[in-house]
Length: 258
Image (cartoon, rainbow, N blue to C red; front, side, top):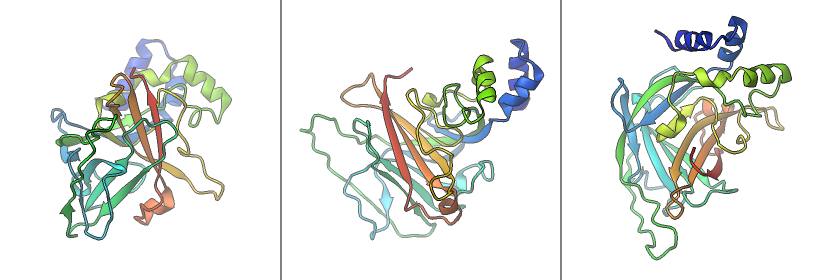
């Protein structure tokens, strides 16, 4: 059974009218979810944590902190609603410290065949914040359809009536993917934050450029383990189509986990 049919069946069982179900599915966006779980037919697609491998001419002094490296050729192809590089590695960096109002981060694409060197950085163990280094583990990629949360003021609020119906019928409750907290990293889909929706998300900026949610990741703060820091990497569609990751923006929030 496909995901849309499963969504319809679950919503019908709760008495949601057919035209309202169609409204909910109109918001669906594809998402690639990456986690350490190998069950369910996922492709081995990269490594979360560890030390980054970078070309010698790229500077990195341990900050912003390294999150994950993805093998572009191993990711599900042509499933997102934006293009990704076909080969090479995508490396994600952001600040793992308390993330309020923090926008430090970057994404680096290392083309296939590029010479790289594993980079090591000795973090100061005397700091109050424990080392942001994460022991590496493999991550597996799966594709799901993703719905915006009912309080996403960026995506669903453009049309007040559609927004009202979406919330009234809890249309985000019937998607078949797992909660974003189950994953180390996600690509595409809708931004999920337990606080305010992150920006710029998808609206055009002052130059009419469309910003896309490239990826999202989350981790527990070392010195406040009950808190989760959520990171969002955004990129202009035109830059992504040109393979240019130099102007990626990062939004970060900290919140108690759900």
